[in-house]
Length: 161
Image (cartoon, rainbow, N blue to C red; front, top):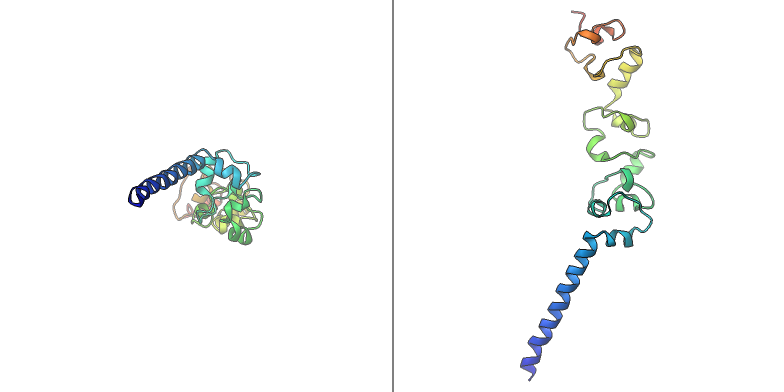
């Protein structure tokens, strides 16, 4: 008798475990888990947000708020280094060697972590220069047209030769 009961109990326990696993997975996919864990965190897409929370990467933006526990804790160190800087994907864009401008080019974000220093120096040096690609000024190549003007310092000196 004991020999027959044991497999039946194992099947029942296994079935309960599988049902619980599917229920948990459904709750995560539907965003229910996110809502329970972060009830005051307002995001555009809870399903995407839960995949970004506590993944070890500071995703910034709407997740880097106190109500969202600073991206589930991923942004704590970032916020210590850049207080007041709240941009999307800061680990991807800050200090990547390219001036991303906008909210990245602010004192709080340390001027894109230094990427915008040259850009900002040209803005200060040539305030009346109105070109589309300011980073072309002083890049070692004479870009002509609107760059080769007095207002743009003759392309930051590139067109003087």
